[in-house]
Length: 433
Image (cartoon, rainbow, N blue to C red; front, side):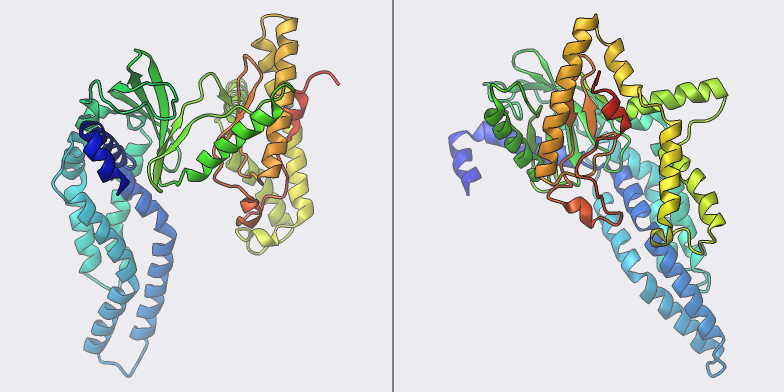
């Protein structure tokens, strides 16, 4: 293999890279994150299987041709059969997190949750009363609640490298090339502080100290194949070469896949997600009205549900039954309530003078146009407000997360139908027309 050949030529360098990648994969999903993610992911499946099991129990108990012993045997057998796939997944996960702990964080997890997990699995495997499957699952529900309570604490979004990977924390003056950098630059050390982003896959913000003495920040993402993102970045580079001299440019960044399940993304400095502008406006309104800040989904359903009730929609959870006029009415109400100046005022306030504002507005307009057309060409979807960033100082628009590409958005459960995002706030920031 190529790695073996390289290892003969540069044994120390290759060994360091192998340890580096291996330890990064260790922190992709920490054990507590892995258990919580698995329990949340299988919650709906478990609910359906428990309902199915309860129905089967009633059928068995209502059968007059079976003796009490036969009924007990059948109920126990159905319990094993229906919950077997769930139990298999959890036992596999338990096997992963029951090995000898190698880091302080793994030791903490086993001491804090190891006993609860073993007890919960035993209750699921050998229930006290197979006729009450909900009781057998209750211990795992309590475990999920404990993990969720910890995950929502502020401390859960800040980790120490020395606790989750002492090996990475101890690296010094390595021969590892700084990821995504063309210059001759190596990793001299890794900062101890890790910031965890509060999204589904728990990506982690890492800072590497370069051999030039400067810090280099990366987002380490797990459970995702970043090869597509890497290719799109190459495409943006080619587009910039073609557009050279025209004043148009697509801002891009380095993406370094570490296999098919994780990778490093160079942190884009000085940019603000559009969602944070909307969130700040929400917080100001809540402070004025002395109310709580609602999530976007809560705002949407607070308007939708009463209208669905007025239209006598029998199954509001079934999106296919939502009348189109109702959706249009909800959209109009939301647009009327949300100001269109959120982005334009930020660009104005970040400008030193009128000349600066004019320059940032022009760059905003051209970069928005370039990224909209490139997004249309590659069929880019999933353009929610956290995936569109703006450098408020220069006005440049930056897109992140290219996982939904090549018209994949049209095949989602809720299909995306627009070619690119050009909502009122984006239009209003284009300047004087």
